[in-house]
Every structure is written in C-alpha cells, then in structure tokens.
Length: 228
Image (tube, rainbow, N blue to C red; front, side, top):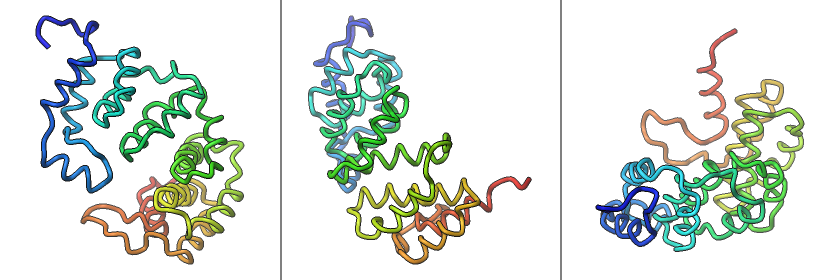
C-alpha cells in the first residue's frame, strides 16, 4: 500500500492485503468452526490498528460479503453510527459464527440500539438471531441487571434450552451460568436447572479451561470470587 495514506485506503487495496495474509493452515482450523477465511486474527487486528476508525471503508468492506473483510470492517467501524435497522440486517447477513460474535460484542453492545435489539432478537424465530438476543441479555445479567426478570429468564431456559439448536443453546447456557455466578439469590435454582438438563455436560474441555457445563462453570467462578 505504498504511496497511499491511511485515510485514502481503498477496498481493493485492503482486499489485496487480506489475500496476501491468507494462510491455508489457518483456513483449515477456522473452517472447522464454520468460519470461511484463512487470515490470522492477530494479523487482522494489526491491519485494523493501522487503518484506525474508518466508517465508510468499513461499510464498503462489509458489502464484499468476504468473511475476513467483514471481520476487519467490524474492527474499524464506528458502532454508534449504525441505525437499528442496519444492525438488524447485518446480523441476519452474518453467515460465519465469528462475524456474528464480533458484530454482537464489538458493535451492537456499544450501540444506542442494543436494548431494543436485545428485546426484538430474543424472541426471533431464527435461532441464530435469537442467540444474539440472548448474548445481549447475558451482558445485562452481568452488568446492568436492574429491570431484567431473572426468574423469568430461568423459566424460559428451563423450558427451552434442552431442545434449542446449538448456537441458541450455547447462548442460553451462558446466560444460565451468568445468572448463577452473579446473583446468589438465584444460584441454587440455576445449579438445579443445569444439573437436570445436563446441557454441555460432556463438552470436551481443554486442560486449564473451565467446562461450559453450567454447574461446574458456576461453582468454579463463584470459588474465584473474592470473599467479603
């Protein structure tokens, strides 16, 4: 990208740079998780750091429908610049799990429309869209629980998590664990639901990592909490 200032970077130049970073081994690993790109995420973040925030370029990269370009777009965009409907369309277009996760965590959570989208997405008939609503709910449970019906959430989790499709089940399980970790008054019920439903009980967990099985996860994180 010689001779081009950062502000004048074109989509073609960025796409050429991403193509040069393509690594077949990285692609192989990523594709196992449903992410069709071969760019090392550390290198992708380095490109984003150099480009800084560029909303217009981010929008153009998103329109390429290329997974690596969309991930880069999410790192250089301005989260508060998106309208509610734009974010809704972007989520529904997010085929790759990593794009979906970064969109929710890096953009929607910082958007003024996060709460409205949380409520709309949580009950969406598309389970992948609903999983984004549950991810936003988990954030509320952990950081801004006032006004959230925690007992009501546990009712829904108890009734629906066992049979939910994978992505939605994972998001509901995270919410269950977060309720148990952060809210002692609901902990016994959260542990009981986890034990009875046995969701992710046999999930393969690497050494030195905490199992996503809610009773183990809750117990371990509570153990780490500083005592009063």
